[in-house]
Image (cartoon, rainbow, N blue to C red; front, side):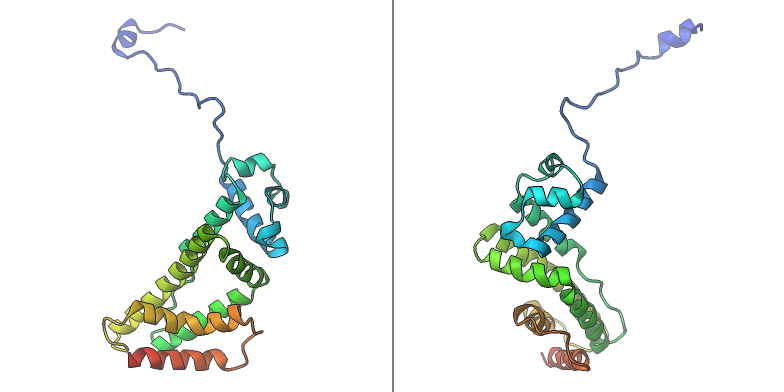
Length: 212
């Protein structure tokens, strides 16, 4: 095949294609997500203390190397997974009323906290967090950020509708909105709330927020 001399003279010489550095690994997202899912399952099955990288890898269907390429230890892995909980959070209800938003939030939260995985993981991580400051910080941030974001947006919408006054204390809002259900579901671990309980809780919480 012939090449036009003028064309080849005007064009810069082709650059050699870059190659990935020797030993560099391309981390597949599907493998990463499989490992994260396996962490939740392993935590629920054996708890943090007995959880191992080997068990996580086996449950995820990957080799240990795939886990260690992403996280240095099981602590870093759990910290990452727990921190991601804050990003996911709960959907923000939009029913048009403060009481309606709270009722929907409580229904979703109650179901989530009664899920077998969550009901095993949260108490276990709370116990481990008492001994591990790094885990405690990440766990508190995950729970607080997830709930605070939803609670503040519910109250902000209620403020625009004139249901609550402006400038209410955000920490008090978080305690009122999230405290009762977490106490019942996570701390004393009662079974499914009795019929009508969530409606009464939403009504009482809405009244308390309006009284601030």
